[in-house]
Amino acid sequence: MTKSDDKRVPALRFKGFTDEWEQRKLGDITKRISRKNLNLDSTLPLTISAQYGLVDQRKFFDKQIASKKLENYLLLKNGEFAYNKSYSKDYPFGAIKRLNNYKLGVLSTLYIAFKPVSINTDYLEEYFDSTKWYKEIYKRATEGARNHGLLNISPQDFFELNLSIPNNRIEQERISKILKLLSLVITLQQRKLEQLKTIKQELIKRVFSNHNWETVRFKDIVQLNRGLTYHPSDITNNAGVRVLRSSNIQNSKLVYNHDDVFVKKNITDPQHSLRQYDILITAANGTVSLVGKHALYLYDDENQAGGFMILLHAKNPFFINCLLDSDWYKRQLARLITGGNGSIGNLKISDLQKTLVKIPKDSIQQSIGTTFYKLDQKIELKEKKVINLNNLKQFLLQNMFI
Image (cartoon, rainbow, N blue to C red; front, side):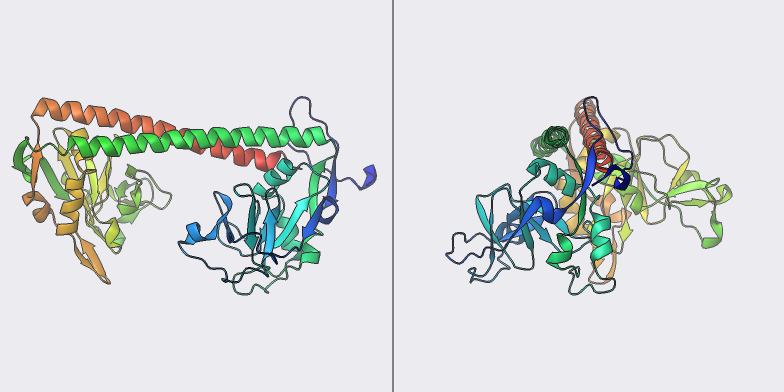
């Protein structure tokens, strides 16, 4: 490839990196694998997972999709790659993954398998985790010829894909090391996040298994109100008052959405207004499993609870919020929610008010609530860290390859 032919696009560079990149065809740097599992060297059927790559099909689907006769399947060895032409929302042009978790495995012949011959294998794996190769598939897959969820691209066309590669093998190695180190950090942070969530669930089970507390009715410790009912003519632009609905509760957190509804201020009512540390509960929803989900309101904005919501106010809101994470609340939801089977799921305030619950004395409620609130803050910080690290990796994936 001559310099006159080299139409490079600026990409992210680090100290010590060269700027000598070239376009290489996949078929020039890899070799197609067509070996069959004729001797039954492996009985492990593989599939592609978004998170884990090539994995055991039986564990992933809880059953074996592959034929019981595996002799005519492709035999893949550790370190070799496979392209699954099956497309999805997350993989609009299919997925290319390396076999990392097993010594051997077998794949349907619908996959295209290959191994690196003149390229750093880690670099190639990271490259296919980016979206830089999508446009090459797009150019070669026949438009309108997607059949049974598979892209119509032949092996010959697949190996004509052009890849951006540094000439220097050391630079290939450097790029892959940076990305793999970042992936390791993400994995460790994700593991810590899951541990914090497990600790919280175990603590909630232990704390709320105490049967020596006082038994009261739920209405004695909380104030419950239904949200604002409004008409389409009441809706205005974002200069009005925001109405929080079920869609604003995501993963037990209250969030603002781009499609939130705003109503004219003159139709609002103080009894529907959210105060800081109130709790919002979904009272009705077409999806029954979403009824009863809740979140602590941490803002101090002027917002109203929507008509299909329950607005909860309590003296010790942090305690009540973790009570709503307990098995007690799950049992009440299973008992009280009506609807389903095509009808709207509904949780009545009057039913929830009558429920009996065991609670400790006021000072212990405050101590429990504060402890869980601080734990929730740690979990949220860890979640943000994982999100930021994933965003950083996606940025690098899109900018470290020309």
